[in-house]
Image 1 (cartoon, rainbow, N blue to C red):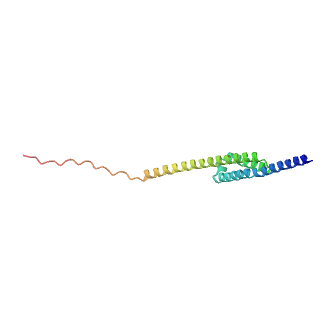
Image 2 (image 1 turned 90 degrees about the vertical axis):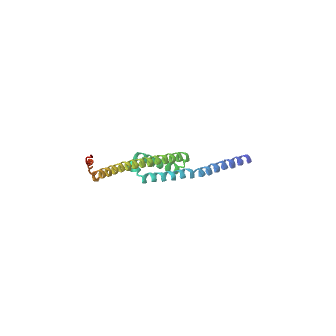
Image 3 (image 1 turned 60 degrees about the horizontal axis):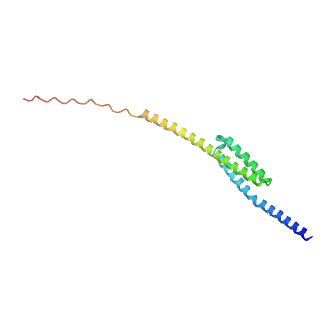
Length: 142
C-alpha cells in the first residue's frame, strides 16, 4: 500500500505541476494580446480603416481568434495568433501612413505649382533696354 500511496502522491504532484505551468503560461498570451490590441488601435488612429481595410480586418480577425484561444486556455495558438495580429496591424498602420504621406506629397506639389504660376503671373516685366548711345561726333581737328 505504501507504493500505491507514493504513486498517487507523485501523480498528484505531477498534476499540480502541470496546473501551475498552465497558469504560468497564461500571462504570455495575455501580454501578446494586449500588444496586438494596442497595435490595432494605432492602426485605426492612423487611418487604416480608410487606407488599409483588408490588413486591418485581418489583424482584427486574428486578434479575436487569439482572445478566444486564450479563453479556451490554448496558450500556444493564442500567442501565435496575437503575434500575427500584431504584425498585421503594424502593416495596416504602415500602409495607411504611406498613403497619407503620398497624399500629402501630391498636395504639396500642387501647392508649389500654384505658387509658381502665381509668381510667374505677377512678375514685373523686365525694364526696357535703352539703345546704346552713339558716340558724340568729335570736332574736326586741323
